[in-house]
Image (cartoon, rainbow, N blue to C red; front, side, top):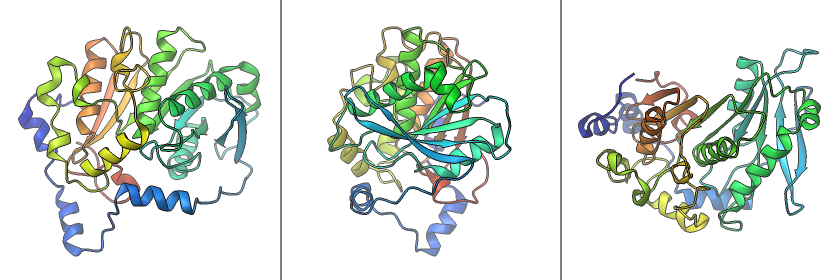
Length: 312
């Protein structure tokens, strides 16, 4: 695995992928600002897909009585046996998204890995600022971890209990997993997937990694997510960046005892170095990690461009 331990190696990842260059030269690549996408989503939210034999919606109570929606995805192959559970947390800058926002991914995970995927929803900014998202995810995890509730969904968490998410969901999965481990909760987590995660701001980058925190400047004008989008998210969500409910780095004993963590980063993403540094910190604490890097591609490229080649 390439370690990306020098400025030169990290900055090289921000050079535009040749196939993306070709695509951009052809024009007609939509790139609306995140603020506009969020407004459109909230004005005309997409309807939930209809329930099916292996996919349905369920609502569960949060600490304040709010009913939060789950989307449950069963593997396409019926089985009388219980299965492991993968808890999925959607992205969207803490401002948009829902339990079926990433259905193309959640269906694939259920099918490829023969697990039950439970896709969470959480209350969104700016109407619901920090700590609303972390609290809703935590409450959902507590509900799912109860044996009777897991069994209702066809799961045995001792076969596997995974959590993962994309972008803002990568943040929420990382901080939830860190808290779950720190508090010694059971069943123990089997693994964490942090895809293009948002887990740092410059004020909280560990000193030994500050020289490698370059993406916010290098990719300030990138596609999909840029500096304007990051400013929009911070203003809408208003996180306390020093709280352990925002970055896993702020836990009392960060990273210690974490289960295996799988991290994806995109080279032309302002969040690139969040993932690179998070992987380094985990590995330095003895955590088993896997890092997949996609040079020269923007944040969430897999949802926009379907035919790019594989990772570095």
